[in-house]
Image 1: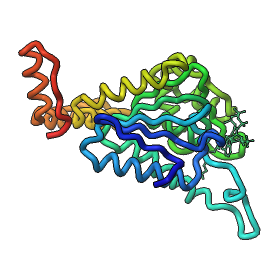
Image 2: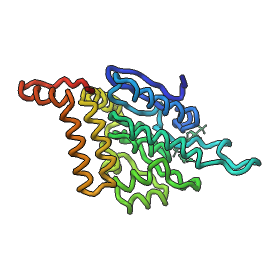
Image 3: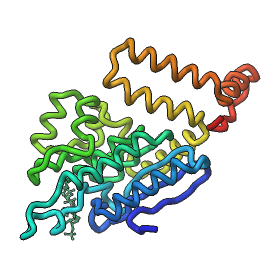
Image 4: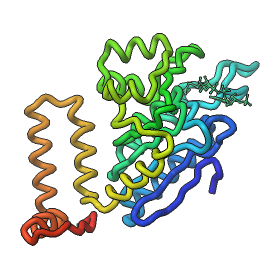
Length: 262
Ligand code: T3D
């Protein structure tokens, strides 16, 4: 078990904390593998019905760890394609995980660190936090999905400018632009994010997983294709115990008790 990622198992949900605070939680290989493994474990455990991702200390994540291991050496240039694959495996797992993932951005989210936040389903950010497309400042392209997430959320004009200028966006502007769900006061970020994750963990988990698939597809589908996908997902939802419980609870004028699966 790596200490670069803290995994706390709560009642129905897990909290993952990026834990390299002296480096603003910059991602080294150890952290990237730890994230992959924690996401696989969460996927395999039916008792985990939601995830919260945050960072330890004053930063959320400063992106790829910058150091000699990714510098050109006598052996030649570094294989940044292979390194991108490592980051991208984490992004793919975050998106494919059939559970809601909440991100509490507690401080700066730079480079791939911003991408990790944007890959989550619901992003809350402390008012003091900022998102920085730092890639270009070191001569790299925007990766780990940031060019995709930004284009879809804030539009191409803003996405291109952010990527090319390497400018920062603070949490209030990120909310105003639709890049994230909400900016909240620093003092309440973690408690708000934990309450939201705990509430999602009580939800109809399989339906929340289907919602993820629908919204992932919405960006590439035309209306006809999306209507077909919605019909198929609704047909699946209608066969589930949580749908029956939802309607029963409504008729009985009580809160539903969703099992999550089955
Ligand atoms: O192949 C591939 O796909 C490659 C992958 C690329 C994806 C990427 O993420 S590329 C972008 C990599 N990240 C960056 O370029 C960001 C570098 N960091 C910064 O620009 C600044 O640190 C921040 C804007 C994020 C925050 O600034 P500030 O002033 O609040 O903090 P600081 O003093 O710069 O940093 C605090 C410490 O964290 C400092 O260490 P020290 O001096 O106290 O010992 C700093 O060196 C360290 N740190 C910050 N970012 C990184 C880092 N150490 C290693 N790697 C980092 N990315």
